[in-house]
Image 1 (spheres, one colour):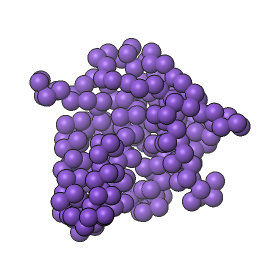
Image 2 (cartoon, rainbow, N blue to C red):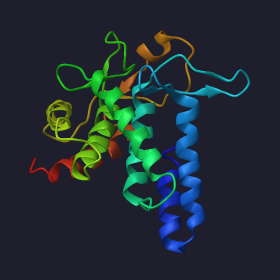
Image 3 (cartoon, rainbow, N blue to C red):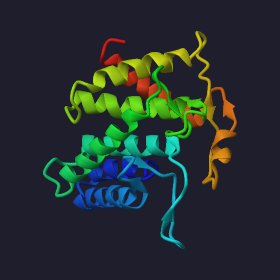
Image 4 (spheres, rainbow, N blue to C red):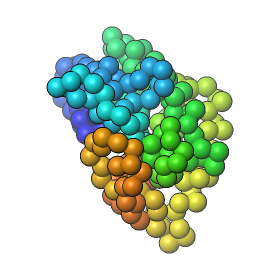
Length: 209
């Protein structure tokens, strides 16, 4: 979703073509239709069209890409768009699910509902982005400030004094068992997480951090 929605939103503004906004809302709503688990309020990593089934795992970064993209949507989609309120509701439900699985130290796990999986930096940064924007734009109430603050403290602990960001999961295709996700390698300064970390930092500047 993140690989299409930010581009489409910018095209809508550049061209004044409302159809791009409609495409964005269709993409967001359908991603949630096929990936979102309403009991957990989390997204699965994938959906298989051949079997009409979701994949097994609530992967941290997949949920991060979703929430980052949806925060971009809420920032840029006209408030009078027919799907704006529906997308806001999807965002709020998803954030509520994410909140439940935050670790005591502020991080989130590679597999969100499996504490035996490692704490993962890129998804934590993406949730900081989405929650920060939610607080700033009043999509979320102030109870999320505590969630944001502890996440920020945890993220900072994963950045060394010379700017090395640790524990970013490598690129990850869809796995069919938990061990696949548990055993993924983590790299310092992996590009799959650096952009999210920098964006999270820019969000937290607004709060004086």
